[in-house]
Length: 130
Image 1 (cartoon, rainbow, N blue to C red):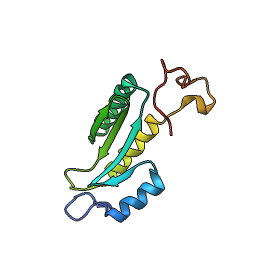
Image 2: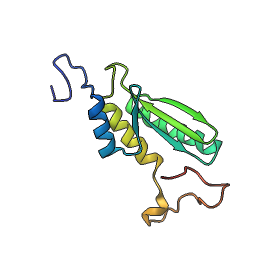
Image 3: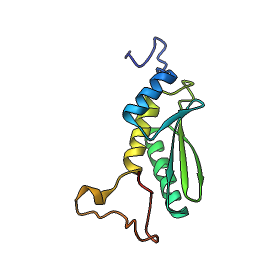
Image 4: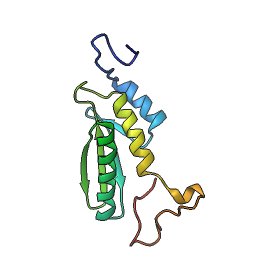
């Protein structure tokens, strides 16, 4: 048994104050509302929106922890909570970090061989990076 589980093996559910503190420290673009940690990603259009949805879907399936997703033409909202635990747990924070890392990845900013999508050409622009 770890500090993150109780005697019954149930995952630790964080309080609203703890969630707010962790989000500010670890995931400043995410926020807590109505029992979910949330993040809205702005995109340059439908093609990019679908790529973000598929990316989140892949990560969620690999993690076996599934968010709720709402989307429109140029944005995707990801919402995470642990339904079994009835609240926000470490699973939500860990998946949020991985989603943030992958969706916000900008290869061109790393200085390597990968250029990243050309943000100035709307035919190829992808996510509207923060």
